[in-house]
Picture (spheres, rainbow, N blue to C red):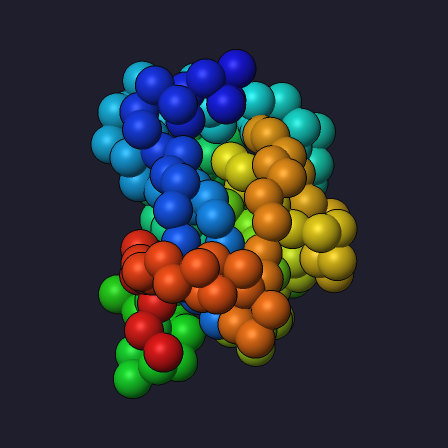
Length: 184
């Protein structure tokens, strides 16, 4: 079902992509294309809610940019507050008067998890506040299973990634696109 929603909204892209991890890929999931449609976002995240609804969660936190709408929609469906972290001078922070209480149980929300880099940046801040991370929830899991927290994904995608030096797309001379929000 989520795959269909991604396809309907043209969120599954094919080409040569530079991922925020620095790796290359022949496909990219641009969840913003799905999340622009509130009814599709609600449907996609209902699958995730089914997986996390019995967890003890006090608050949902999404790293900006990809996790903001996901956190909001998960929070809405779960009846929990939802906030976000954002980068300031390259470092993830909690701003805008948001706060996490010591001992609060936190669900981290992402659109897509590949290496978990953005989620881990958010987790560092959450733990500095004394929050307890119960897991990471996402629309699409394209990791290789090496995420250090329980991962609750709406769908699992098998998408190849390549180190720059081993990228067959580079060797073919295909132009590269960097579609994500992170600067590096």
